Amino acid sequence: MSVLLCFHTIKGAECKEFYLKYFGAVVTFDYEWYLVVAFGDKKQFTLSFMVPQDNESLFEDKGLTLNFHVDIVYSEYQRLVITEGLKAIRPLADNPWGDRSFTILDPIGNILYIYSEIKPTEEFTVAYK
Image 1 (cartoon, rainbow, N blue to C red):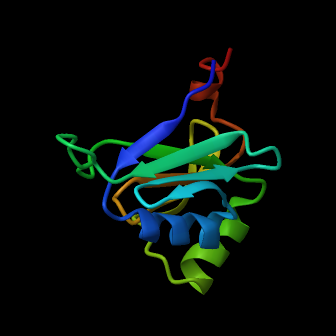
Image 2: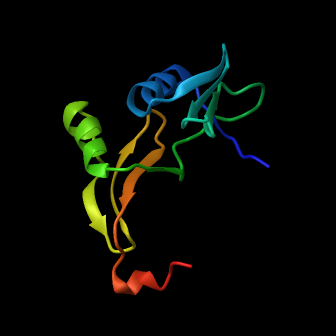
Image 3: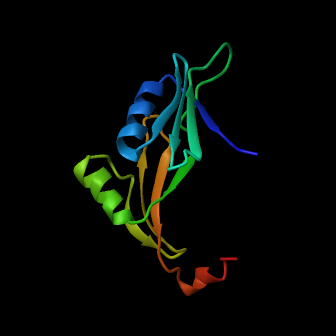
């Protein structure tokens, strides 16, 4: 089984530019109303963006977070926030559950949680199985 996230949006071009420019995605399908971008060496993770058809509704900026695990989060923060000028909606911080992270938004309001693992506090160590 595989899972593909698809967002109904009229901002497909903006999303394409954003994910290609900032996250090294590649386009695997691009039709006038449907776009698929892939991530990773093996293109193992994909996102789709589709202009609503018939009576389908638009994605309305509600409740989705995409987690991006990176080797060195500080480098990504420098690249995306300091160099590229993207706005961090949550600044770079160490979290007791075992990661160092920051968050930004993509063009359609998805929260991008960008993180690297660090040692969790004792309180959170018991949560790991």
